[in-house]
Length: 107
Image (cartoon, rainbow, N blue to C red; front, side, top):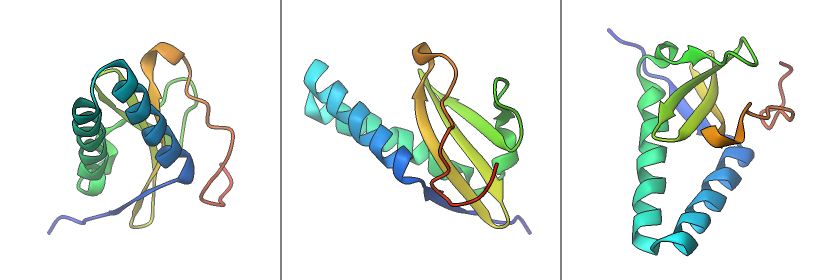
């Protein structure tokens, strides 16, 4: 039987999501922004099954992994029974900044 992981979002990830939806809404349309934000969250939630499918973030290393959704890197780590979403990072911004630990654990 496959193990299911609980997916949790760091406050940083939630701020990232809010900012990108707001940005898309201003640049385009609120409905498009909400649909994109929902699709991004759904992609992150898909990590509840087989979270190891994401690659190790090459610039940072273990324990951080990522999956890609369009232009965004969904950065996360896997702990016992949990997938912790660290941030949503636009690829044009270069190396993901993972300098704070919203989950209270050491890297």
